[in-house]
Every structure is written in structure tokens, then in C-alpha cells.
Length: 113
Image 1 (cartoon, helix red, strand yellow):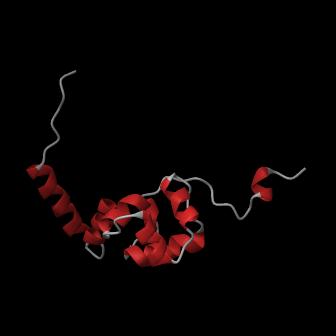
Image 2: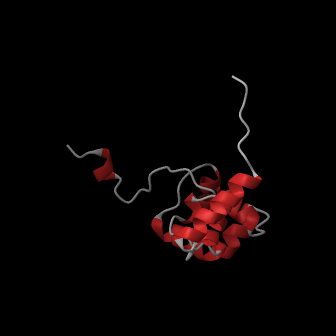
Image 3: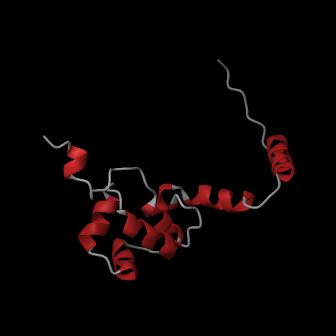
């Protein structure tokens, strides 16, 4: 007997993504705007907005459309992508100084137990 993953091999597993956030960040006001820009079927985009994960081909198209540099693409929040690009190509010593500066400027407040 075949296992479900063998039967549905081409089906993308559900995985949290940030397509809606990326679309908003890149000024796609509606699902229809995204459909038009991608040349996708509106029911496909609607399923993404309902939580379905895009297949690999669509992940690449979305990455290109949204100008996402990180290979994790739409599975990374737009703010995380900014942070990734900010730290890209920096030396470990420089990253340590940045972290130290941020921790000094924004200390974590302890909550009363």
C-alpha cells in the first residue's frame, strides 16, 4: 500500500508563509493585483491567502516579484528579510558590535514574576 506522501508527491505541504505581508509591503493592494502580476489563477492566489503553500515554481516567481533575496523566500517575514540583508557580508566582529549597540540601546525589560 502506498503512503500518502507517495500518492501526493507533487503536492506542497502546508507551511506558514507571509505572502499577504509581502504583497502589502510591495504595494499589491489586492489579490487581483497579485494574480495579474504573476499571471496566476485567482483561485490559486486565494488558496495562498487561505493558508495553502505555493509550490516550488510559484515560490520562485513570488521571490522574484517581491525582490526577496533570502532563499527562504515567502516563508520569511519581510522584516526578517531586511535584517538578513542588513547583516549580509559583515564581519563577525562588526556583527558583535551591532548586537552590543542594540542591546545597550534597547535593553530587555524584566517583567515582575
